[in-house]
Length: 440
Image 1 (cartoon, rainbow, N blue to C red):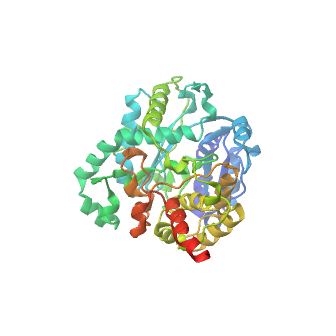
Image 2 (cartoon, one colour; image 1 turned 90 degrees about the vertical axis):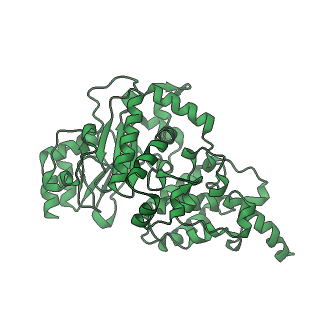
Image 3 (cartoon, rainbow, N blue to C red; image 1 turned 45 degrees about the vertical axis):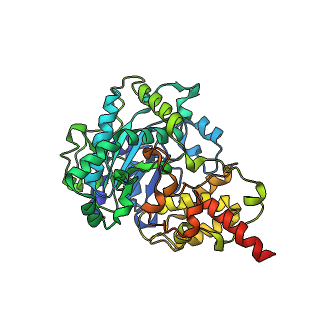
């Protein structure tokens, strides 16, 4: 901790962190004790040092920029959030099984951005195995289809990330397979070979991804020049030309140099991202079938008027409900909440279920995160399906597929699974077939 205090005592580090947090919500992490109050802000450079003296280890900031970050509260309506938000930056969180996979994915995504003549691109090492790509709000078009671009959040970054994945998929796949075979990747990562395959081809996004489903309002990312508790390294900005030669040693506390900023908006070409936005929206309208946001159109009594018992849940949900054994807790929570709401769980039942589920995970999620997701679901007036089963996604463009069940090793189909396309269908059909017989 002494080294960390000494590091954050540096005036240049304090200056960079405070500069990065301007007009943003700040969350301060206190090691394994979790985060401090939200929302919070950093007003003065010395605030950084004072937090660290009290046990702070890292600083996290919002993608969104607010007129008054301290007024942002959990449970706000979309209208209230839009009124407070005056901008947001595009942050692509490239999260790979190791830094090399993240580096390759970042390289091809940056090349795709360059293709659209976007010049103001920032890179940042996450501090562990990933990289962050940043494009400032000032490069965005002012409106899109008569919608103010400031209000195009979180749909905007989700759509753009999906489009970029579709562009780089083939190039990234080839680049990875030039270095190692699917068998070698499977052995190295200790992942079943089948989990790396989609449509009989290697899918690079099973080992490195932009997890678009986690992009939501008040989504945070680690501040530049902030400490990463898992690795002991610093999240430092990187020059684009130095991406492929970047060495983690540069991120050791004693080696960190300032002078390079993430999301530097001093040399902006106005609206240079317009073509990227236009092409992403067109691609989304033409191809992207969002199974995870599809409204369930079934009779009310089938889902909303009674609760379907756990005995009729599909194998994937039963496995998920027993607890997540490795990475993937947030994606699992996303699936679980959508499923429970669709099979008749009210808000109170959902909260009780997921809090008990969280205790069974290899490492529980922060209760505050779960409560925030529950609050979001309470505000939704429509029923939302979890993603379709993997074998029923053949008609969906590859970049749009969310192969969560196989990636998380939840997909263990039984004979009944062959009859359905979504876990919800399984529960409803099985309840109809067997529930009525038992109750008659």
